[in-house]
Figure 1 (cartoon, helix red, strand yellow):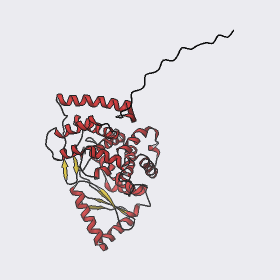
Figure 2 (figure 1 turned 90 degrees about the vertical axis):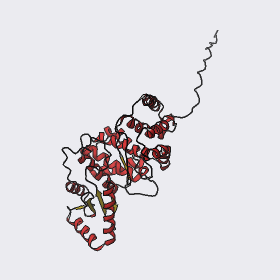
Figure 3 (figure 1 turned 180 degrees about the horizontal axis):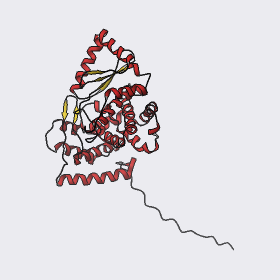
Figure 4 (figure 1 turned 180 degrees about the vertical axis):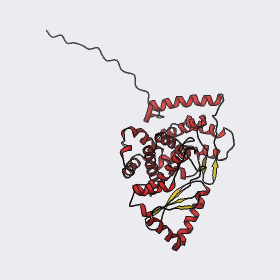
Length: 345
């Protein structure tokens, strides 16, 4: 992750969030898991935090364990406290998980992460529920994505990168965590709608309400996510073995080029193209680092795959919702009988 010209100030961003959501201010506690440091800034929140650490050993031990876990994974999270309050844990070193692309600055990347975690708190559907495995993550990503566009000149490019990398993880990694974080359908609709939205004029609270609407309308059904995940299980298993050659990607190519399932091709195709171009990054899957190719896949075989992928992408864009369906051939047009005119004497 690029860190040049970064000026990420965790305390300043925490203070901004508290100003944007004043009702939340005394109930949210920010912790740097890399530095293992609580971020002071609001007298009421600071007092609540210090009291928790002094009189609630169970919560204190939970916090210490979560800091250790997420620091080791170089990841971030939010979890609820005992009184409708929240602990936001942010990993701030420059080797953390990046979902916005290789050229995104550390400041922009960390700002996205904290907006995502806060998105779980300030939106109506940001908390995990029983009816959908992905709705809460789609809501948090929708909020953070729109905040990227509001905050940064090139925020839309970051959102497009996020959309691809969420799909990359669902397609490439074993386990259910990445199914929960499959937000690409919702991000796709935000990208499609961005020119029609007055995002620059909207407040963070209004953005949170809009995130709820995008998520509740466009979050995919759990079965759809399961279908995509299971379709790529052979590729996931092969990639997890880390053979060091292009064997996993050949398995991926076969799945993408053979499938007739709309959702499998919709998200498998851009991920395959990303691997062919060497444009995707390594991924953390729990405690395991999954390394991927840094250079483009080359050779006559991969030239053929790229050509076939381009052809199928053309078919997909042409056929849209009819992609992959075995439809009957259209009946040939029947010749119209000649018009006959009745003679009127």
